[in-house]
Length: 298
Image (cartoon, rainbow, N blue to C red; front, side, top):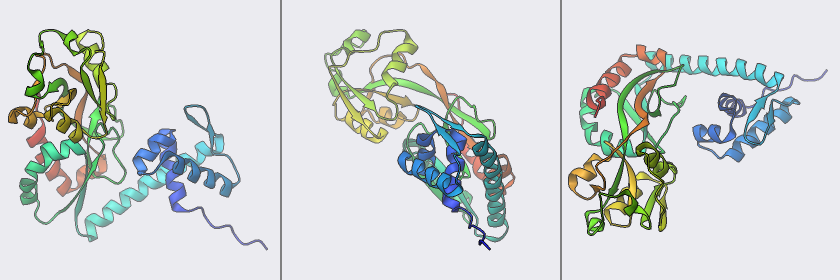
């Protein structure tokens, strides 16, 4: 008699479920904090283990097979239930902890200066803050609360809009000497600073105010907003920054607005959480505090 085959690993099942949710190995990798090739490898290993194809790989997308669609729907419901039961267990029997995912620049500029007040508000609750790349648009299954950037299109989440983002061209006061801030064409030939996570920043800004995209004399690229701000402060070039996130730099005088215009983006900052988490008293307390501190229409 053949022994019953063991179940696939939970890690492989979870990876397939996240890949199926996004239908993208890259987006799944961003959520799981692994590489896209690792996601692909784990899904392939699961398919080999099961002896069937779950996803068809196309040039720029993934498509479920009929078996893959059926398995995904089961696993998606299973992981949602597992997550809910785990949270309930923590709430009833464990030390209470709230997990907050925040874009790194939001955390350093807005949240960290006020963290003492939040700690005083919930002295018996542990807080775990994960700082993630700028522009994060997904609420991780491992988070209780997230600060997301988007248009509010998260049908399975409860959200509160915090504030709109504005695109501002900024530079050091030193680099502004002799610069004609009355003409957008003055940017042509200048060193333009680009944030790798927002590569279309200059194009978005130009389109919003109805001008041609500036022609850079040189481009400096950085993978964090903090590095962009440091480069601007040192007078290394002109850059696009988000306001009001960057307000402290303007207030200190380390950078200034190059032009008067600062168009509002089509993406706002939102506080997001799962509907079932809104029943937890500690979550309600933090939601109310975050809204009181950061919700405005600047």
